[in-house]
Image (cartoon, rainbow, N blue to C red; front, side, top):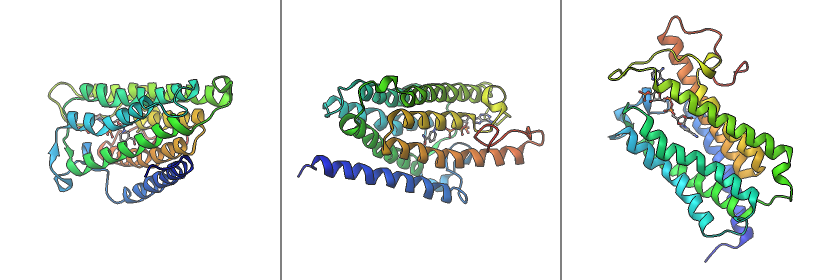
Length: 257
Ligand code: NDP
């Protein structure tokens, strides 16, 4: 039996609360076990998969699921605010699934367990954001001129630019053949250890403001929990590894935390 509109709306709401609980529980768990990929990659978490195809495959559902849902022509998919907001989500994941894996150097392998978790997350969130925006989110006429949409859109764009620029800085720290770690400098790294994570957090809070939906806010909070924890681990790791690590650098939110 197909779900009725109100039933699916309720389901999306529950999934949104679930995402926040998942993010908070992950943040709690990550206090004891670092997220097992990159510098914390470990064979204890399953077969090692090559990083490039793992990134591409695990992120692809967040690109394909919303595109598929929009193509099926949901009740709200044709409205301009919905189209633009879905476009923001899809642009991010087109970059993450198709461009980012080609840019990264073939670094540490991704453990199978981490890959499966990321894949499930992208199916879950791809459905949540895609279905909410293509079928249920309703905006008043003139929403594209509303200060919430404009501020949110600027936050999304700025966050994405910071994220891409910071990942570019990290990629270029190593010379060909090197695999060690160096102190990142320049851009937002002058303010925080997790500059790429700060960009991504800003991006999704901007998106949430522009969308004004429970689903998008849940995603932003989940990102804050998960990437905030990873940034904290990196920050502590840098402080232990490098005696000359800049002491005024915050963890992930410039001047604040
Ligand atoms: P990291 O900062 O851990 O690593 C990014 C890349 O840079 C890796 O290839 C890493 O190499 C390399 N690197 C990092 N620090 C250094 C250093 N000090 N010296 C030399 N090389 C370095 O980022 P993640 O891999 O965790 O994330 C990548 C992207 O994915 C980010 O943009 C992040 O925002 C996004 N992401 C989003 C999530 C979400 O919930 N929305 C979840 C996870 C990631 P190595 O692999 O060898 O460590």
